[in-house]
Amino acid sequence: MNIKITGRDIKATEAIKDYLERKMDRVQKYFDDDVDVSLTIKAEGNKQIAEIGTQVKGSMFRAVTEDRDLYASIDKDIDILEGQIRKWKTKRDRLNKEDSIKMQNVLNNVDNHSQVENEIIKTLYYELKPMHPDDAKLKLQEKSQNQFLTFINVETNKVNVIYKLKDGINYGLVEPEN
Image (cartoon, rainbow, N blue to C red):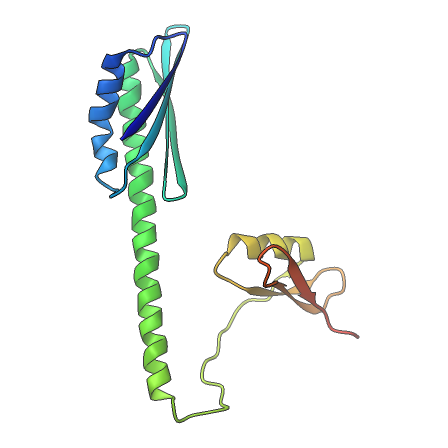
């Protein structure tokens, strides 16, 4: 575990580092890799503020609390971080499980429908919502797994499709001519 402590108005001591290292074992157990942790401590009046941040596998986790006792503040931060990481890991595991079930269904469908060609074998239903093309782009960005979004353009009152281009940066818009 790599720990970096920054003290503002408080001296970062070896005792604080040892305490944080012992407490971060609760967070470390969720990861196979080494964890980089940054702790910023500061005093404002009679309050001790601890801010712990860690980045693991591209996800950033951060907690900031204040208490009269610095160690109590660190404990609260660890509790918050552990909750965030547990939630993230559960969500990630659930998505991986759903993806594997979907892939298994796709493979089963390919086996079952290998003799069927040129047929519509799956239908998806979705809700058409009136929105501005810029809002549709933002909604598509939120749902990173989707490649396109169909919506009713509020400017033209016609059905449009916005889609991600292969470059992964830009978007295309399909509009009817009339």
